[in-house]
Length: 248
Image (cartoon, rainbow, N blue to C red):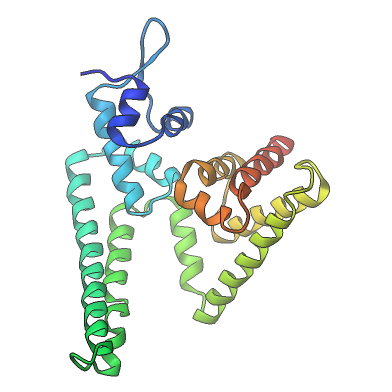
């Protein structure tokens, strides 16, 4: 059965805008009818499912495209790998729920909990296993390898400072929203943001532009930026586009 873009958006519980964007960046290209309407068939349906599974596993869109565009990409093997990774996450979530229940019983004086048991669920054994699994199966891109190599050399204090500096910088971006997108102040902030991305991995302008689009198209990124100030995700995307236009 063939689906129109509106039908597929409803079926997959994604927005039409998201499907338009996936088409634009070459992530999910539908067939075209004689009237130039988008038409999605079985191949596109399963490909979209792959995209959504990888998104659930927190893969960025650029990485997903590289994976599913590989000539030897095997969808069955991919599903097996995704299932294994999701089970690891499920196991960790189960531990968190178990610890929550024990803590509630302790608070109600129904059962005591040892001090060390308060933090059992936060031990990172499963997380490390999950990260190793990701690296082994999908960590083939230069950006991923560069990012992991640089992060692995940072101490916890350095990571905490990086996160705190990131929050302060994002607030600066939010405070600049009343200024013109083309202004020197806004574009200087975007340049600083771009340098921050490149700290982790080499980021060509095309990739940076796609990151800006993702801040709007991915609800999780939008929620993060918009909590600093409503509309910040769109503001940053538009400012990034101007930044890229001037340098391309």
